[in-house]
Length: 353
Image 1 (cartoon, rainbow, N blue to C red):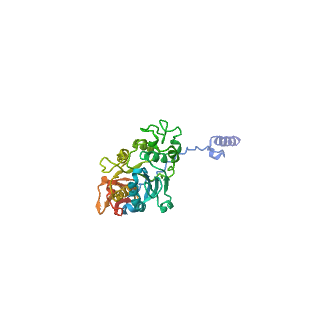
Image 2 (cartoon, helix red, strand yellow):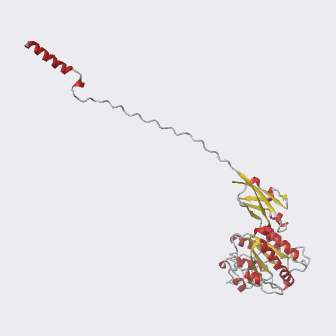
Image 3 (tube, helix red, strand yellow):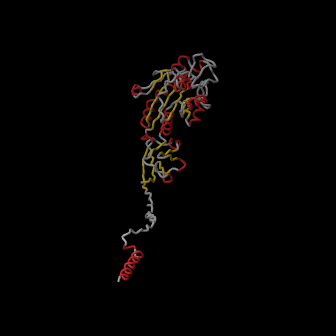
């Protein structure tokens, strides 16, 4: 019996040693699988919406008299002894002329002349002075119209006659002249007093028009000098003159060569001083000045370039007679000069909505 008990006990011990560990109470080790990276979620594809350009037609109506573009105009009247008839012609036509130009433009006016209402003098109406128009009471001689105009336009420091007339004289920083005599420039104090008097007159956005009335020529500051002086001041001038030409039929002091050249260079005009009645001259001057001042027509919207059509008096004009810059239509000035100021100008075009 003792042998049997011993055998049973030994068997139990052997089974315990070799048995399943799950019954032993010992903890099990678990194998941890590494996490797999997540696949990126694909974003849904979007199709861009195509913008449809919608357009509409537009029609705008203009006339030269309703444009009211800014105009700076300076008149220079020769007061020498031979100019009494010409000064009277100016006095007879000036009021009507300025009234017409005022109606069609935003006018700013200056007069350089010996002030008076008779002889070779010229003056503004009291109502013109009330509008802020400028009178420079300055005697203009036969040869110095451009010299005094240049000195008035340029800064004070650019004109100097302190060393007397001769090679040392300077006008608008120019000191090389064909004639350096006092007669060619005027009196020393006159040239000094007028320096810079028109500096604040000019408006940056305005058309600049200059009208000289003389039966002589400019011998000191000539067309080349004043053109350079104005370029230096950022001024783009348009010159007109009532002066003598090679075909003048009356007695004139000299052909106004400088004024003829200025008119050619600046797209202005020369009117024959020998005509007995200047009414037609002033009418032509009015049309020319207004057309050059009001040649730009501002549209309400920017047009699609190829769609623009311009009609004048019911007739479409060729496309080479106007240009388009942004919202501005510029019509050929020569074409406009032939129009009455109340002529309707119709501009039609397509624009984006």
